[in-house]
Image (cartoon, rainbow, N blue to C red; front, side):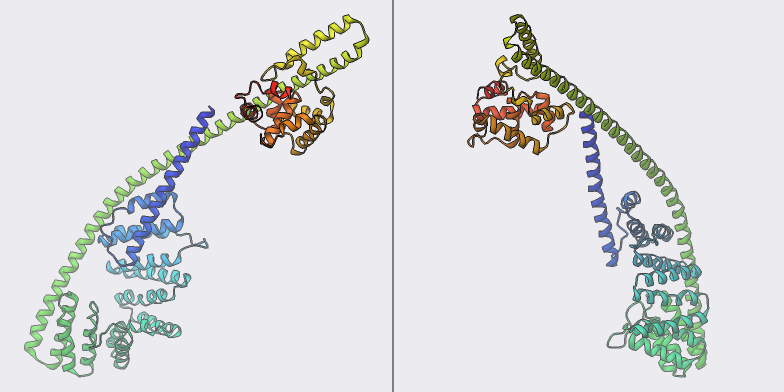
Length: 543
């Protein structure tokens, strides 16, 4: 059973090592995917996040669980599976422990920002506003000022979608104030197109001109030739609209046609046709009005078709979402079974470990009790032997019959005492140094051995000093520098010479009987150049 306990400990150790190795590789993969995401690398081909999420849901910290679910959502995002991405983002924020001092508020703000972006694509402005405000809140808590300001400026989009231009103006004015206070005017300038759109709708041309000028000078989106960076060409529509409102129709036409040059984006084409239609309607060119009215209608129809296609895509995504929900439910059941199995295994190992521990402790108590009993019996016999020796000394002048009886009793006691020695001692060995055996130190050591206690270094040192004083030849022989006995070997040699039993040696030195035998072999080899432990007692008594 004792061997069984060692096997259980080995199994538990192996299990823990396997978990540690798996945890290390899982966390390396987590940080690898996170690095790719921060570098704007598409994650649509990543296939390891399910395993990462499953492991960290069980063994990870709240921040690790949040990070894993977020990155899993980013994989779905890059696969254009918006519903599953939103589900993963929702799970990610549910794992955030906002009461903890080490809560990763920075990542939490990014998750809400990504959620808001997905709601924007789904044309769900109210949900977008809710997510965007959460992103702002946690960015401030993370002391990530730039992110907080950008998230706040992004609120213009959903309010514009709701046609709530008052809220857009309030946000832009507050954004401008914050950016000036922190020296980041470029950020507020980057929202200049949104501001120009509102002011043009309200025919506030001076503010529209100021917003466009700020956008051109501070946003950093333009090259040295005044061309805007790719993806932001809609600016040309608002620039043309401003010139149309101010009567500079040639300039307006220039910017509308410049926008049309980027017809790879459908929104650019619709805006360019609308601008040209409005422009020629103001000029009064009926042919051009008819032409661009027709083109604008066709573009709008195409846009409507595109939006319908988007709706079909969303419907398909919702179907996929339901399928993923079914798969997720199945995985949840599997994970629950896994948790139950692990829990049951831990319980079994714990019970087995506790039972083994109890068994070992019980065996130790039994061995100690047996050692105490044997040492007490040996000590009692030794005391009786010493008493009879004293009786013999007193009976030297007494009758021969009394002396013969005592000699028989002594002989019987010697035979009994010899049973406690690993090798029997000759009769004459029991008669030597009798006076020493009555000293307090030796008597105390016998009592300590009867209680299966370990002798102190002070007691063993005092015993050594007594032997050195009363048995100088013996002490010189065993303390031979050439033999180089260790302090423990020296103590064993002295205790054997003073007739301490094998059990007493084990108790006083706090080692097993097998260890005592090994020590005796070493002493016999060093002092007498003999192998084994059987002849050591006789050899020591001959010194």
